[in-house]
Every structure is written in structure tokens, then in C-alpha cells.
Image 1: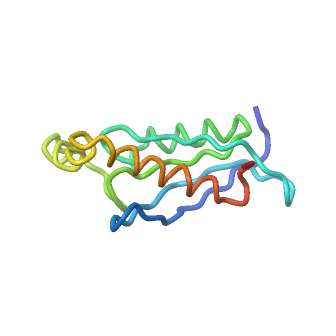
Image 2: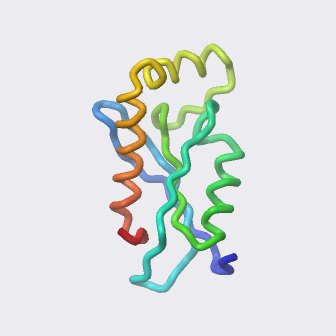
Length: 117
């Protein structure tokens, strides 16, 4: 386990015309050092779920740059089953949209200075 304190920041990015906001968590490393990137995709609830914060911090504490992908759009956390179905429908019905959304998060993570590309 990495004993360095953890840093975090929200990172805005887009997929087509959808504004997204991922969450990056990583151990504070020496200036210029880079870390392996790990992309973490949220459950049906969304990125703002406590489980995602825990998972991102746990992955980062193992010495990685953990990036939480935003699959729904900036700031959306969904707790109602009908809202979850509605928000996820376009991604489930057209898998290429889900792939594009995931790749947008991956490319955003890869562009972060802390990530070993």
C-alpha cells in the first residue's frame, strides 16, 4: 500500500454534446513522477455514490491514478429505479454510445499529467 497522502480533483470532459465530470484520486508523488492509470466505472447510481468514493480512494492508495468515469452527465446521482432506467437507456440500447462514453473517460484520464502514458 502507498503511504503518500491522496490528492483528488474533479475533471470536466465531454462526449459529443454531453458534459461530463470525472473524479481523479491519486497518491501525492514527487513532481514529474507518473502513475499507472485505472479507470473505474460507476454502478447504476452514478459517480456521486459513496461506494465510488471509497473504491477510487482504495485504488489510489495502492499507488495508482484512479479515475472515476461519469456515464450519465455532470453531477447526476440517481436513486430512483425509473430515473436509473431512463438515464442508462441510451447507453444500453446503443452499445456504441456506451463504448464512446467509456473511451472519452479513458482518453481524459490518459491526458492527465500524473498518468504514465
